[in-house]
Length: 214
Image 1 (cartoon, helix red, strand yellow):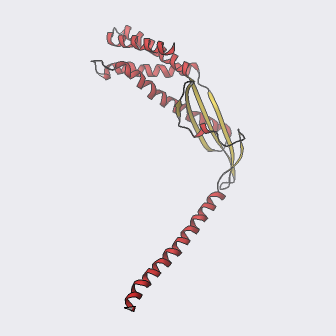
Image 2 (image 1 turned 30 degrees about the vertical axis):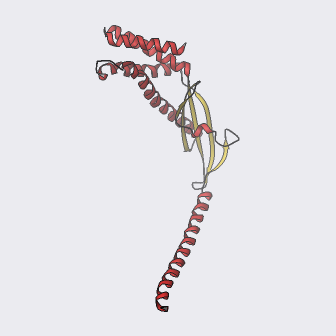
Image 3 (image 1 turned 90 degrees about the horizontal axis):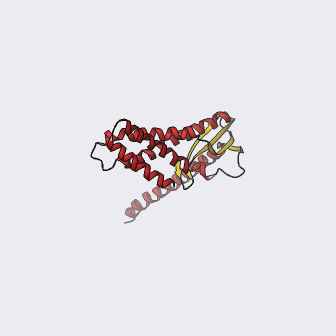
C-alpha cells in the first residue's frame, strides 16, 4: 500500500516542482524582456504640443462630422523633420483620395439605381463624376487642418528621429459644391451624347444635391 502511495505522490511532487521552477523562470524572462523594451524605447525630446499626442493622431484615417471630412496620415522614425512631415502629408493625401473615391462612387452610384440599362453602361458617368469631384476639390485647394510632430532620441541607433502626423480637412460645403459641379458636367456630357437616361439621372441628382446644399 505504501509503495502505491509513493508511486502516486512522488510524480505529483516532481510535476509541481517543475511547474514552479518553469513558472519562475518564465516570469523572470518576461520581466527582463519588459525592462529591455523600456530601456530601448525611444524618448520624446521635443514635440509641437506640451501634452501627449493628440487624439486625432490615432483616429481612423478618415472620418467626418457636420463640419467636414477629415483625413489623417503619419510617418514615424524619419531622420529629417521636413522630409518626415512631407511623407505624413503624402500619406494623408493618399487616404483622402482613396476615401473620396469610395464615398463619392457610393453616392453617385445611387443615381443609376432602378435603371434598365446595365450598370456598366451608365457606370462610366459615375466614374467620370467621381474623377471630376476629386479634380474640383484639388482645384479648390486642400490644406492641413492640424499638424503634430515629435523629436525622439532612439537609444538603439543613438540618433534623433522625427514622428509626424498631418490631418487634412475638406469643409462639407466644399465637398457639396464639388459634387454639384461634377453632376453639372455629367448633365453636359449626357446632353452632348444625347443620352436621355443619363440626362434624367443627372437632373435628378442635381436637384437632390442642390436641396442638400440649400
